[in-house]
Image (cartoon, rainbow, N blue to C red; front, side, top):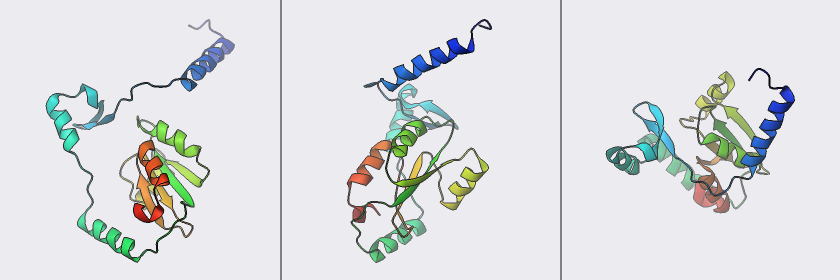
Amino acid sequence: MANRTVEAIDREIAECKEELANVKGRETEVYTRIVGYYRAVKNWNKGKKSEFKQRVCFEPDFAAAAKEEAKAAAPVASDAPASFIYFTKKTCPNCPAVKEYVEKLEIKHTGYVVDTAEGLEKAREYNVFAVPTVIFFDAAGKELYRAYSVKEIKAKLEAPVAQAV
């Protein structure tokens, strides 16, 4: 292995990147935490799979009430989001797909990696508890909505802004 040249290694890397760019139609594995560590859902036992299907996202009552107040007070807007920020983590299995998708959007944006001090501080500032998280803002800098996957981002961007809050 020590006899390989830098050029040969670079050539192999370029070939791998080219192969990866053309990959389509493969099954996506869903990873989530189980008993403190990430594991593919398809490898869980029947009981844990059932628990996973029953999981729901929740918000403390005060957060839901504040959201409802903001929704009632907000004027109906028909504009698309003016900007967004997104949060990723180096070891997150879902982050690369979201990052790749949002980097192609023609909306002003900033990305943060929560493994860094700056990224962790911004995550605290915006109450981000999971990665990937994408937060969209209107022209005034008010949060419109959050999305956690490419599918959710697409749905939010295609839906009218007034319904998304």
